[in-house]
Length: 154
Length: 319
Image (cartoon, rainbow over all chains, first blue to last red; front, top):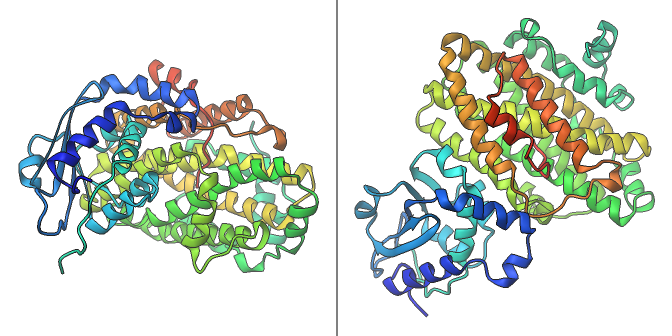
C-alpha cells in the first residue's frame, strides 16, 4: 500500500480518477448524473491542489497537485503547499484528522458542506460550476488505499 | 394573484394554533409583496416579535400515530426524501448566516438577529419531528442529522456547499458588496426563495389534504411565515445593493449561472407521486418562484439563464 501523500499514491490517485467511476459507483446513480459529469468535464482544465494543513513529519509533502486537461488528470505529484499554490486554479485544504476521516469513508459531500475541506485559493462560483465533478474526484481519492501516519504533531 | 387585505391580516396576525388551520397557499402568496411595498427592516423585526412561536408548544403525539397508522411505506419514503432536505437545509442556513452581520446596514443587523433565531428554531423543529415522529435517536442535533442523511440527494451539496464556501469568502471580506450579492443570491433568492418556498408546499399540501401530521403542518406553516420575512428582508437588501450600483446585477446572474448549472444534475429520483405531485409540477413551481423573486428586485433573466432554468431538476429542498 502506498503512503498517503507519496509519489506512488499520487500516481494511483491519477489512475483511479481517470478510470472513475467503477461499475458499482456508476450503477448507484442515475445515468443523468454521469451525463452531467460528461457535460462539465471539457471545462475542467488547470491545477487543483489538495493540501493538508498540519501534515505529520515523514511525508514527501503536504499537497497533492492534480493537473487537469478537459477533465482528465494529466499529471499528479506531491509537493509542498508553497510550491503548489502559485500555479493552482483552486486549492482545497483540510486538517490531517479530517483527511483521515475522508480516507476512512466519511461522506465526501459532507467534507465540502461542513467545510472540512475549504477553498483557500480560487473563485468560488467557478469552483462550484462543476461541483459534482469535484465530489466524484474526492470519492475517487477516497477509494485509493493509503498508508497513513499515526499521529498529528502537537 | 394579489392577496386581499383580509387574507394578509389572517396570515399576519394568526397565532401558532391558528396556523394549523391556515391555508399554506395564503402563506406562500404572502411572501410576494410588490417591490414598492417591501417592508423596512425594523418593520420586519416588529413582525417577528409578534409572530414568534415556541417550538416546544407543539405536541407531536397525533403525528406519531399518523406516521405509523395512516401513512404507507411509499408515502413515508417520499415524505422523508423531501423533509430531509429541510432537516439539513435549516441547519445549514442557521450555521452559515453569521458573517453577513458585519457589512450590512444597521437596521438589517437588528432584523438579522431575528432571522438567525428563527433558523435555530426551525432546526429544533425538524430535530423534534425526526425524533418524536420518525423515531430517529441521537445525543445531539448532529446525530439526528446524520440519521436522515441517507435520504439526501448527493446534489444537495451543490447549493449548500456553495453557500458554505461563500460564507467563508464573506467571513474573510465582509464588506465586499460583490460577495454580499453572491451570498444573498444563493441564500435569500435561491435557497430560501426558490428551493424552500417551492418544496414546502408539497409536504404541507399532503398533510392538509390527507388530514395527517397536524403538529408538522402547524410548525412548518409557521416556518413558512418566518421564511416570508427572511425573503422580504433579503429582497430589500438586494434591491438596496442594486440601487447603490446597478452593475451588481452581474453578480446575481453569475451566481444563478452556477446554481442553475448544478441544478441540472440529479443523482436519484424523488418520487413525488405518493404525495400527489409530479416532477413537472415541482419544476414549474421552481420557475415561478424564481421569476417572482427577481420581479421583487426588478431583475430579469437573460435568455441563457431562462433556458438553464427550464432544465433544472427539482430534486432538492431548501432551508
